[in-house]
Amino acid sequence: MTRVASIFSQVLQLIPRLEFESAVRKHSAERHARGFSSWGQFIAMLFCQLGHAQSLREICGGLAASEGKLRHLGLPTAPARSTLAYANEHRPWQLYRTVFEQLLAKCRTLAACQPATRKKRKFRFKNPLMSLDATVIDLCATMFDWAKFRLTKGAVKLHLLLDHDGYLPSFAVITEGKKHEVRVARQMQFAPGTILVFDRGYADYEWFVSLLRQGVYFVTRLKENADYGVLEELALPQRRGVRRDQVIFFYKLAQAGPDAYFRRIEFYDEEQDRVLVFLTNHLELAAATLAAVYKERWQIELFLENSTWCTPSNAMEFQELIALNRPLVGAQDRPVRRRIA
Image (cartoon, rainbow, N blue to C red):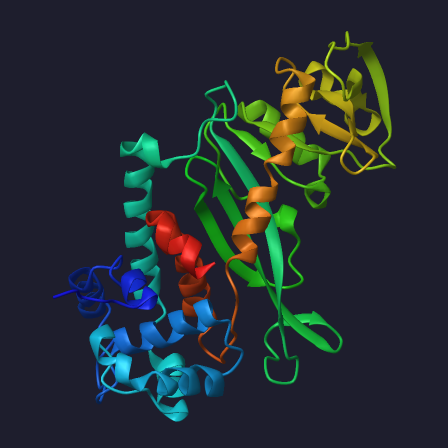
């Protein structure tokens, strides 16, 4: 007899039920619960992510439309909107942090032990490659008065560090929308030799010097109004694209001495017919390689794009973690990922 399972059921099979129930007991998530389990809540909110639902009505209505198929998922019936709203408000978000950590550990094991499932290495260097970025999650200012952002707009900001070895998140934190990216970046610690890629929003010369002294490399875009001096013009390679390669210093950091020498690279992008100016503290890698490294920063944009967001009242923390679970589920099973894309 041929057994048929829905794609959603196949996705849920990647999350061991025993490990989930162990996390539920650890956090006492179902204390005083009456009927609606944490697994049912997880199914509903993961359905929200995969189905791009924008409200509780869409979530519960979508599940109710497939009620005959819910039992094999471990959900007897579709929850009422009030039931799901109450669970989102009162269930501990720490449960989904534990589930996220379980999935992340599993993905890292797969990335380390199954080279055949990983993308072919794009670069010859063996340094860890990380991308750093932040995204604003809009909220209604009248409903979420704690999420201060602008006069008539509320928001929180998600700061994410993506490890390119498997394209898995290494660090994620939510702050108020007004908090600048650099303030969070200064608190992060990186292993010596790491190559960090970020956009111009992280421009902070003193932080650049701090990274230099920690032995951490970075690649970013240079601001147009940067005040710098040229120390040396480096020889240009035969490859097309690289127009200028210079060793520079910033007048603002002149007192820091040799520790504050950087590299300015002009690169012509043929696809979009524009000149990009990169800034890095790596003085050895080829200029074209550094340009390709910055292009890899697009992977963090794709990761954030694949994580849709829903913002119930007290559920921001666990909704963030469920949203981050979505790319991890796809990372474990490529055929499933292609079919739900």
